[in-house]
Amino acid sequence: MAKKAKESQDTGAKKENWFTRRWNGLKSWAHDMKIELKKVHWPTRDELVKACISVLLCVAIIGVFVWVLDGLAAAVISALLRLFRG
Image 1 (cartoon, rainbow, N blue to C red):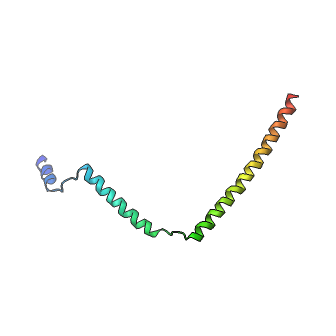
Image 2 (image 1 turned 90 degrees about the horizontal axis):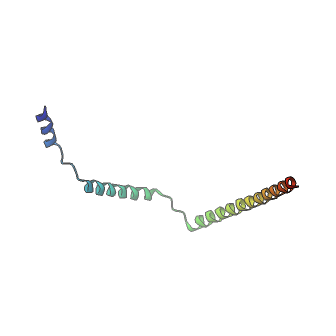
Image 3 (image 1 turned 120 degrees about the horizontal axis):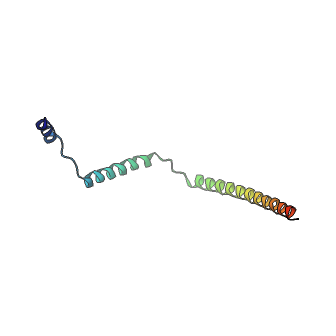
């Protein structure tokens, strides 16, 4: 039985060392990354400017909304504290 196991190991391919496996993995990852980057739709300058403006506008609107709610909450809390202090 042990003889058969040894024979099957001898006929098999030699196992790669750790560095070779890592290097092959890195090469495979770089190749896959190159293929995926070819599939990406890169925006034109006009598309990029429009997207940036819309993002900045949304951030400004949400910022003003949060600022108003914060002021309202501060006023309500201040009024409640004055009411309960007497």
